[in-house]
Length: 76
Image (tube, rainbow, N blue to C red; front, side, top):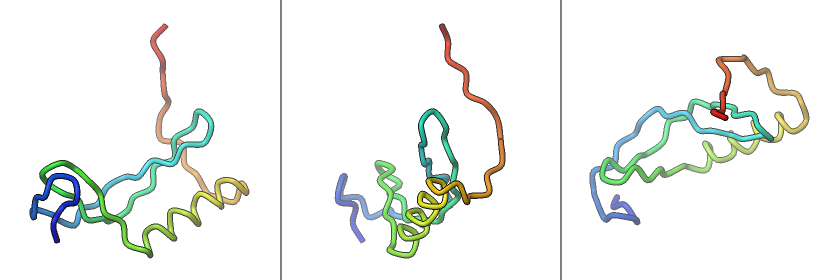
């Protein structure tokens, strides 16, 4: 496989945290995807995309089991 952004062939499977944003909240979802080591472009398979879509829907419907992991601060 060749990266469509930088043409690198150095693509590896890695565990990453995908961010889903809802208003000012950020939900971190651990997923395993292919990542280009040259530019960082991520490649998602259908099963991973479906999982992310299902999680987004469960968040929208307030069915998701979420755990607080920190807080976000803004400098004024």
